[in-house]
Image: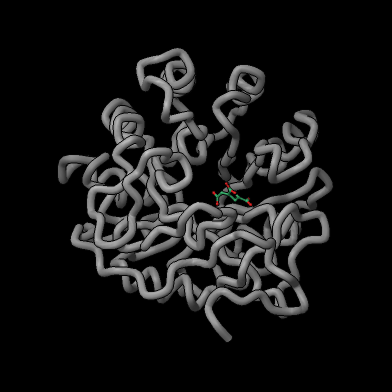
Length: 311
Ligand SMILES: O=C(O)/C=C(\CC(=O)C(=O)O)C(=O)O
């Protein structure tokens, strides 16, 4: 089967690109112990069916393919994040975690009726957080009182909450987010509009959110989703996505102990271009410009959040 196929009788959403086959070897040498802290597994659909309520059908992307990419790029470990196409069915995620030899942790999606036994099983497999998705094209909005109930259930396990939203929705969600008592990790810097000024009010609100809430971390990932003017991480381009750099660099420099980075492989929902993951790794030194910042971003911070026991 070709790498971009979708199995199990599912049909990939038309127009969405397959993940990039044969990525480059990065020129940037990742530090020992580096963690790809945002990536996914999809299906395979024949084994782990996509959720009936999903808004898109991706191409399959298996745990073996993810682990091969990890080794090729030079990462040591992964944090696998549940995507909306699997809904609250975490079987593909749990299967990948169990086959990772302790080299992957997970972020799951659960419903308000999740039981302590189900949470304990997820924990045993390596799940350390839940994801709340507020991106309108991906999910129907779940009421915040349901989410607050989930927070109370996962809190005793020491888990954190990953939130995914777009910048224009932060004003409305600000108070709810600020009340979450656990650690909170924001996906992709809250998706800033990078055509706007990084010193302007929109990104200013995100920076204020991080300043006011010392329990909030963020992934400075996904320049390929945020970029408008590029250049793209393709055709040997080792200085890709320069329009996103001022935003990510600002965050890394102000909050060096609360940032994470991930590839976002297999890059669901991209229609415009599919990055070469090797060249995407070469984006990192543009936003974390010293050895110390790189070590915190790639090694120390994810280890603190996902492997606090020092495994
Ligand atoms: O992979 C990501 O981070 C982003 C996604 C997909 C996603 O989050 C999901 O389906 O849950 C996106 O922006 O379409």
